[in-house]
Length: 601
Image 1 (spheres, rainbow, N blue to C red):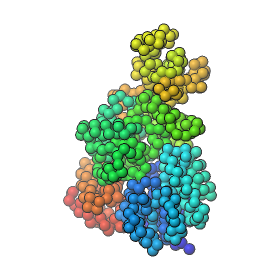
Image 2: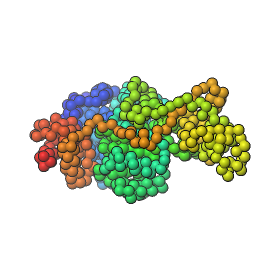
Image 3: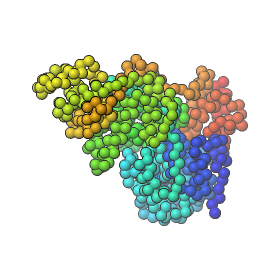
């Protein structure tokens, strides 16, 4: 019989919190009582506690499947700071250390063991696992099992063996990125049909959402950082390695602390740069999606995309790396027509059968619809994941700077007719030249200045027509890059529009002056004196982190330091009341915190 501790007692004594958030308590109690579960919860929603608390309630070993070494390392270090015996087993662990670790497992000295999914393919591992007698399996980033997902990992498919080999051991699968199709696939492939599905809200209300149209994206990014996130940690995503290197160097030349990360760097250099990002305050990481899962840094204040992501799921997961501590954060994206053409081309040239590519095009169109919406962005985002937000959020650019929309049916007809009459094989630039009556050498050479549509749209600027073409692509009336050269073609759904049987609403892009008035909301401001105390506490934390060689946030999150700065506890007893200060951290750091407060007085 497995002994069980009380989850609330574990939460308070080990993690320093008096209550669970949302569905956490129901999940924890279900798992402690032996039930299987699939947990769908946004990044920053507290997924880790959903298996870490049960692991400490049950008397035995919990095995955690995690896809990245960096994620394992962060989780293990954070648990050790709490006084929990935890370790990671992966290909990077030296043989001598691995043998020592296995001896500790044989002796029952560990409570949590993190392993990579490929470990289950190793000879003898399952036999050793039987010897260690696990009491719980946690499968993190469970969407990696989906062959339709953007992070598919074939090794995850082997995890169904857990239920076959250990039918009495409960399993909890967790993910922050799953639409209903992916959810069904996780349940099927991990054999969780008898388990309970917990769906938390996908909403991250602390993240301010904003999208801007590309117009010198380097300068736009720099302006956003300088005016809103000066001296704060952030991640900037680019599509190519060359652009990552160029942008990181350019930001550094402009006085922004920045470094680059992509798969073209050797493993040691990538590790050094990731460690620097985790350890430093105020560093901007410019990266491809190679810098992805496993980034557990809680105080990332912004995530920026200077290129369009491949899907809504990818976008949602990437912006979820901002504001994991619950404090205000910012998801900023710049995109343009070239992004649309490039991303459609990537899908066309990518792997997968016609069904997979059709699904990818649908996901991209949904992301374009989000980018071009005149509605509250959060309502559009949550709707994609099957969740409805009754009222506009008040914390996105569209809510804060309302977008003008109008009946654009006539303009849509002009654009669609021009695409058709020019042969459905030219890119946006040429189509716009014909619309506005710009008699370029190419237009004249092709005799497109003799078409009935030549100059039909001269009442609008080229920029407005570019916006309209983007929106028609988002509405799936225009298909981009069908022939591999950025050409525009009409979809099968245009006939009702051309015949006037379907009305089209279009938006007017905000001016740069209006866009600048969009500001992220700050729900937890600190006063001047509190800011000074907070800064002093961060300096103390950095000194402790450097002495131990660990990231600062595994000592205390910014949210905990901010709470200390506001309340200024005068004793260890008062400090113990601060959320995030558990028994081990109180004993280890309490005197140091009080001394830092005394010095900052």
